[in-house]
Length: 411
Image 1 (cartoon, one colour):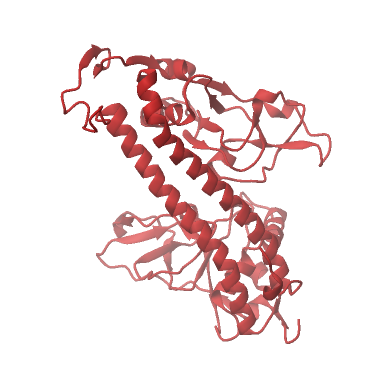
Image 2 (image 1 turned 90 degrees about the horizontal axis):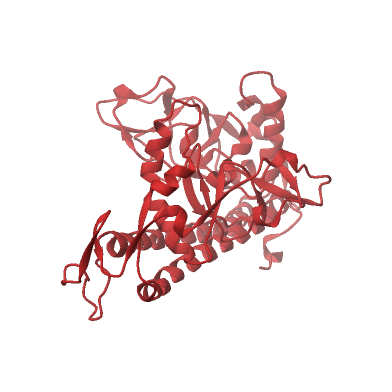
């Protein structure tokens, strides 16, 4: 750690509250919910006249947006794009380096988002009285930082960014695969334009169709309900299975964990949970209340909480019931939103009412390879991302503390 210097973070950064200058042009408004784990996840344009009162701050490239509320939710982002038409909520701190010849903005970002710092800031937030666990810039400015020379900072940034870049690449590949799968699914199972024996679109090439309760379908196909092609197992009220110690437990997978892809759930259940309620990588989970979403789980073994279905089938392949459930998601959301309850939800009868078209065994077998390859690739990329994330989060505190040097990292 030769030439490393000790600072209070307040000596190196400032919090910026420069007021955004509105015009008639549309702008992108960023609230805390529009940032997550380093990325801005909303780039939608809004009419300035329709924005809430907290839309006030301007930003620029290399700024760090950091939510004042619940740091552990990881609502932060690094601005690495042109942002002159972005206006930011007053609930987001805008942190800016005073001198980038002393501290790299991206190094600052990695320091502030390391697990140790996030956990510490969350502890401070929870120690304050108020409606929400909240931090202020004063607490951030008092953080101690041991700062290496700029060239070492850049080496650390380059290494850690290589993990982020690979994770981002896998995410983009998965998005393309998902788009392909959904396009194929609609083309083959909704429009019935799957390849016939001559490789031509079935329906438009004169393929034989028969009447059904859903209209015309290919001859030999049949109409079934969602709950006929898959089993929808609701989770348990897992507070009845409390973990007895820190070593012998399963993380409890709830809607929040599914929605955010969280690996370390806050609640823990005993390993005595019945086997059918244990989740493994690749399982299909469907949140039937609240957010209503369906996804593949790839964040390690856990226990299935209530309000989540674990979807399985002994007859049909995973992709088949996954994409059919996803196809009906919009109508399920409308049903949930129509309910006069705090948390909208669907009931099992809605699974029965949701109809699907099932091909004959021969056709299903022909389709299987295309979709199976996509699902396997998506799950594999997600699992790799989880490994990369764990490795990055393990290395980062050691690198920024000087415990480990970049040239000693082997992976």
